Image (tube, rainbow, N blue to C red; front, side, top):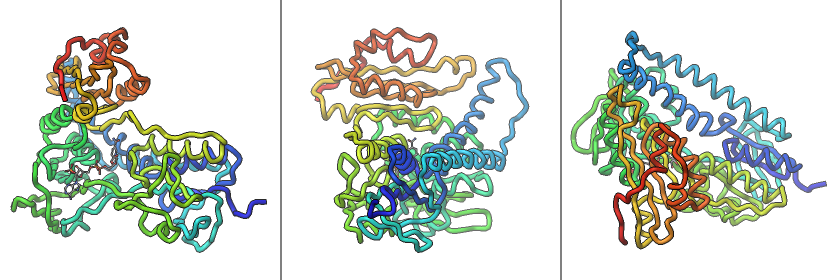
Length: 456
Ligand code: NAP
């Protein structure tokens, strides 16, 4: 008979927490999980999933426009925001139900209320109930960061609220230039909004390969996004017609909504972690080792709350590895290298491995293969969209150390390229692979001449 109520108590039923709970329960552990909002977490409820559904919705605008060149004539399409919202809601409710059912099927006890840590082996639910646990897993994710220096910010939205705006924003301002800012700019401009994107720097997507940043900047501008470089809002006030933004260059902008997308921060505030002696870093992230273990031996953390790589599949892998190691008798550390990812703008960016700037730091000589072309679909439609591909090769070993794509379904391509790069494929391996014709991806195995050599 254990001295604890449960073997594992997970706080947070998002991607990382639910995976850890289910796998641990599958190994026979007695598991409970608490969730204060909706089962499924950020990804399912107000992140990746609804975002991708809205991206699909937005791309019909391109398809309708492209159709004419292919012989179609269609009446002027009309978009219904309320319908998209309610269909999205039905889908995320369905998915949340599946998450709940899978947890229950695995034997996990679900507490749909907030839980906080009260000691190395204890948590307290909002209802006051105390539960003791041999191990506690913190999987509370992240939350939108509050933008410093913006007064009247309470009138603005975060990505948590933008999905469910009552009215479609005919004039939408966005501040930020990361994943969230560019994805929403790209999708709302296609849904018919007049979008202004304000960024403090001189280009979008800091940290991404420069060629992709530049390519996507041009695509956003072609799509009609008004990019305001080096300009941020400083004050938001409510007017009869919407919001008035005072901008850092002294001008003003009248809009219906302002989305603040200036990053997310680990969701640790008020969780009781400091009182249990868990070390946090200066951003409030839980510090963990390669096994997701904190400095308190009975407390672990996975996913965005640890601020390692803040992506759903990484959280899932971390949760799974934690459960395998602690309850499955295996020794699993998560390898955080060569994680493929995508930005779901139109066109998308898909990427795996090092950017050219990162590769330059690491290798003395690089061979860069680049391609910039008009996708076949655009030939008859007249669409101006370009596709960019870049393969970065360590000249000494011929190993492909980074691949970056901007184009239709670049995310799908990045997923498969992730396998090749993870396996250590060389450029010769790419060249030995027969093309699939006619596809855009065939360019990845047919680029023969080095575009540039980069010497450190
Ligand atoms: P992010 O990618 O960290 O980007 C934050 C952006 O906000 C940057 O452009 C930054 O500008 C800007 N910023 C920060 N403070 C600012 C300030 N005071 N004034 C003006 N601009 C400011 O954050 P995010 O877009 O909010 O996304 C959050 C996380 O969600 C990301 O880490 C990502 O992993 C995840 N996510 C992933 C996906 C996907 O995989 N497709 C989609 C959405 C979200 P600088 O560049 O100048 O610093």
